[in-house]
Image (tube, rainbow, N blue to C red):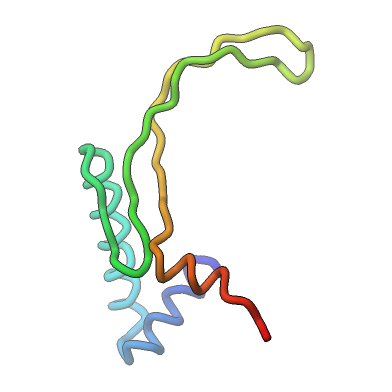
Length: 94
């Protein structure tokens, strides 16, 4: 599912226009990005949590030459699925 398909699904589920659904989705994404970039965790009960993480500096290899290269430390985003989401994904089919 891509962004357009998600907007269409939201519009149908909520019985709103696609324009309103798009604004709502973009607002959600913008606010999650803003909060996580400031170091906050965004928890959506039943769905999951978005938080910031840190990757340590490390040594890697150039796949073409095999030469060792230094990879700088960087910030990253972590998503942890909530229990309800994990339960749905791990539900056994009978």
